[in-house]
Length: 156
Image 1 (cartoon, rainbow, N blue to C red):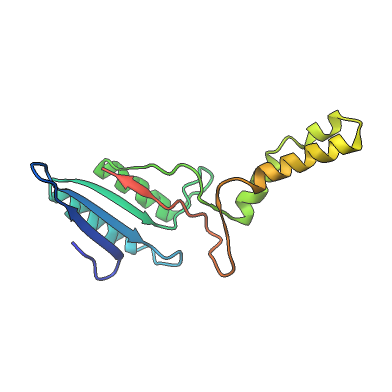
Image 2: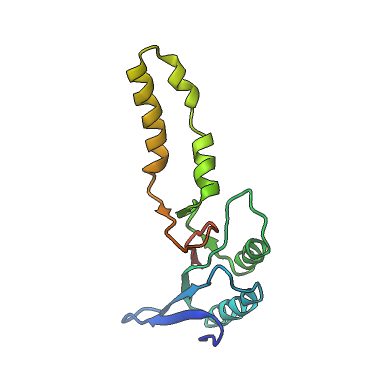
């Protein structure tokens, strides 16, 4: 089941008096060609054919936000549907410039003008900004991709 093309690992967990469980990981670099999804589908098909419970974990570098319509996202959604898989991660795990700006736009900045005291106005503005900055997400570092990354955790 190991793939020559995919960066993946499959481990069989054997417990006494229990059915084995397969755990697979896959890392897909952000700039990988879309045809890697065909190899991923082959891997899922092989896992499914084992007739064992399996878990797929990985960093697939596909933006699953509702406003995105990429071919990779559409292919994965179809695969999830075929094999009865679902993604557990529902929010981006990495803040990109686009996500950060979107979060900033969603803040109720008008609340600042509800006060006359400049110190209270400043504190309100600062709290709104810090609500976005302090969110528990991974901030992009130098050289990292700007694509949103849902570090997929898929289950069957």
